[in-house]
Length: 99
Image (tube, rainbow, N blue to C red; front, side, top):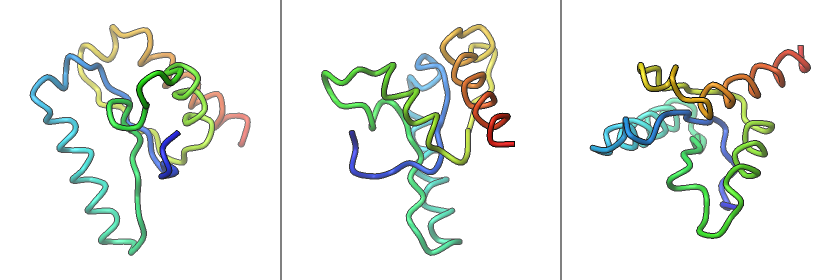
């Protein structure tokens, strides 16, 4: 696993990031929040935080159980994506348990 403990999780459809704009947005948002709070604000993005050979599904569900903020990138593709909807459902289930 990555050494950085994510505070937030960015959920998106890979096809929506073909031009890397979502990755740029994640980096920008992370930097802006860090400037405001004076602490690192790591946002999990699978393309950078899942290592080669790592069980990606296990890693994603582990991070969803640990994060504070869920950042869905809402596009038409997001609603059609079973994995994205599953990530949102897992996060909401955990939040409901935490009350």
